[in-house]
Length: 162
Image (cartoon, rainbow, N blue to C red; front, top):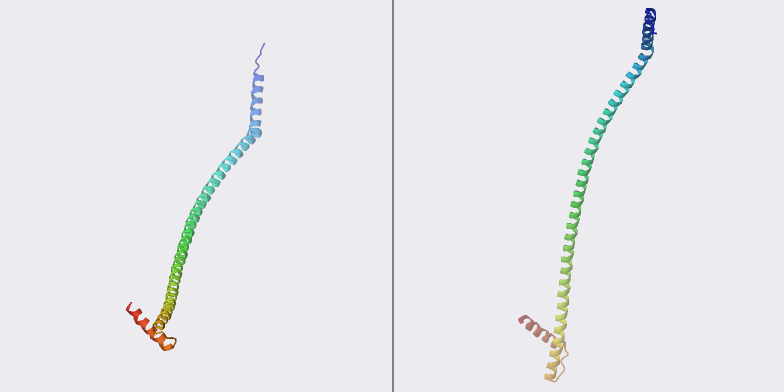
């Protein structure tokens, strides 16, 4: 059966204590050191991740600010372009109005010139017809310049009265 000897029990206890102390000194110290290094590495990685996150947030805020500034600048450029286009449009409209007025004045002057030419032609025709009629009535030829001057004077007086 089982026998218990005090010496065997003491020897087993001493062996266990020696084994525990050796393991504590050589094995547990290294395992704890590795665990502490791992814990420090994890803390460092977490700290680095937090720093990176903070930097990313700062960069995001900067980019959003720049984007907002760019949008404002784009709106300003568009507004300036619209103002320039409006000024060009108004300038072209004013130029077109000036050209239209000039063309109208030229057309009116041309109409007046043509009217005067037609009136002179009509007067000459009427004068020729009047001379022809007077010659038929007088049964003589009235081709002299004095006769024509007389008819022109008569037509001028009649034109003023009309």
